[in-house]
Image 1 (cartoon, rainbow, N blue to C red):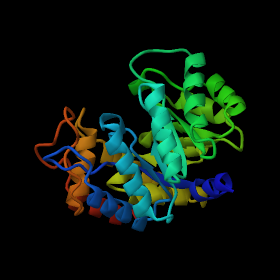
Image 2 (cartoon, rainbow, N blue to C red):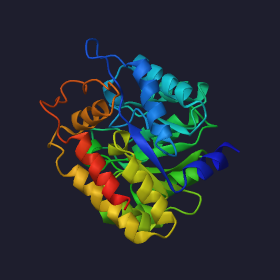
Image 3 (cartoon, rainbow, N blue to C red):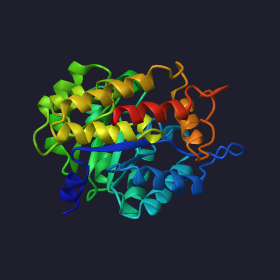
Image 4 (spheres, helix red, strand yellow):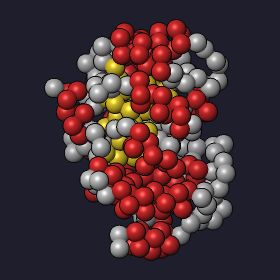
Length: 304
């Protein structure tokens, strides 16, 4: 029942990779602001939330803060949309602990990035993912593929092995920058395996290749064009969907290199939610990278 519910809710949907509001003075999670951001995103029409991922700076937070973030987001969502929580770390033991906690608070799914920095082979990745999934056996499990940042990625062969060896395996969150690698995973996935893509510049193309939905960091600050793009695509309004893809790319262009999380949090702040700074050493912005008033004009033009 849990698996079918999740599939129905997120198929053809947008799940923002939610930024994590931080108290500037303590670098701890700002729980009340998390609640505000969850409400804002749900009211903007998103279909789910991905909490504590790359944009959410999960791997930079102490385990206790990650658990508090997951609890706060789930409570704030109050079953209005599914909440996927990121439990990946660079070692299996801590990932298991986070997975057990996620199951105890009834997360709708768990997501684990491949171990990072040290390169490992598929046998080790499979063992790692099996142990994490086994810690939350009744919770749908996603593997997180982002090899340009994590060094290790999810190959089509590993995907097939996870489908065979992990009973709770549900799909892949793929943020691979290579469209051909995305296509290979989509081609390997069967109808019962979800592929949610995070490469925003080719979101529309990935959906056309067969991806089932989007997970986007920029949608944490500006969800509107992503919501419209996905709805238009699945309704067959391809020209309108293409208009929103062009708008998304226009929004991505001015993000300063190396300051993506700072830019996303700056835009959230401009929209009235005090998301705080990125965690050091990720840079803060010295000035707005793009004015919300300009974005509003672009959004209004896209709807015409």
